[in-house]
Image 1: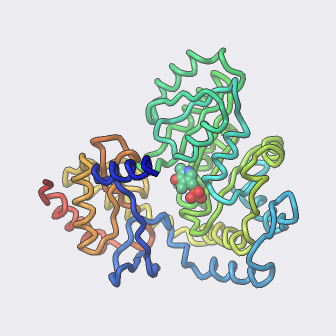
Image 2: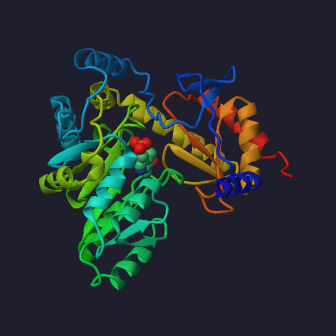
Amino acid sequence: MERLETFLQQRADQGLLRTLRPVDSRGGGRISRDGRELIDLASNDYLGLANHRSLREAMTAATAQFGASSCASRLLSGDLSLHHALEDRVASLSGKPRASVFSSGYQANVGIISALVSKGDAVFSDRLNHASIVDGIALSGARCFRFRHNDLDHLETLLKKHSDDFKTRLIVTETVFSMEGDVSPLEAMADLKDKYGGLLMVDEAHATGVYGPDGAGIVAEARLAERVELTMGTFSKALGSFGAYVAASGPVIDFLINACRSFIYSTALPPGIVAANLAALETVANEPFRRTTLIENTTWFRQALIEKGYDVRGTSQIVPLVVGSAERATAAGSALQKAGFWVLPIRPPTVPAGESRLRFSLTYHHDRQQLTDLIAHIDQALHVPVY
Ligand SMILES: *Cc1c(COP(=O)(O)O)cnc(C)c1O
């Protein structure tokens, strides 16, 4: 217990203690908490689908028909034909023969990677990959080589050096990176994978729904479905719902059904969620204006900040503005919150020391007027002195 208290005290002393702050209600890109309404720039509801009528109605109807739970793992009696309908839809959207759905993106990455590789194998992982990828590699027992973020030369150096030492070589990357908002050089990675032999797995958590034909993701946009062995994505971000998927070949999916512990030993997604996920995919295809508006507004917002001289990263709907120290990020975040914008400082250990940032997560709900006001408040917030 003393160790825990010391840990908490240290985090507090460094200004890095994490706390929970309940939201009382949300909708239309706004949240309300502590009796105040704020514009929410910290959600992943990129397309504004979480409150969409078609998702809510699909969820309610499936819950009325099948009940609130799937009542068991997919391998017991939890396997509904609805799950298969969703998997078929994801497979055809992703351009892969088969797909499998998971209860969350975290569970998908941990389970898939730890099933796919083990001791004697090697994983080549982008240094900024999500914690669920890091944890999956740790659990697998495979050797992990981390390459510098999006650095193909470094990746190739590592592949070259270790190409004969391991049975299976797995390259893992995100497509749109959650804290940088940039996109990985997928085609060149597929080239390296082919050159040195192995498998390529990508995580489209922040890309699914936003990029590619009908929101299929970056792999589909770059026409690389046949060269990426496993494409994982989530229903919990742009798709406004919950759960995750992986699209792959028939043998890979059959292998996961037999070997992936987070798939086997966990209750199947509830019918209401599965129906909402299907409705989300349909809505993304039917309402492309959600994607185009989001991308237009994001491009405008990023450009406006760059013209003011800010250190803005990335190219996607995630707009990180790097401010330096954790203290400066915290002070600016608090000032923006006071001004009515729910913006969070991202600090170490999530990002490297000295690269603390404000992360603006834009959604379909944010209009130009709100973004103009936001920019004015960013100017003010970043001129607040930090002591
Ligand atoms: C959010 C996220 C996950 C986890 O997905 P959940 O469905 O929220 O568990 C996995 N990978 C990346 C890159 C993510 O951003």
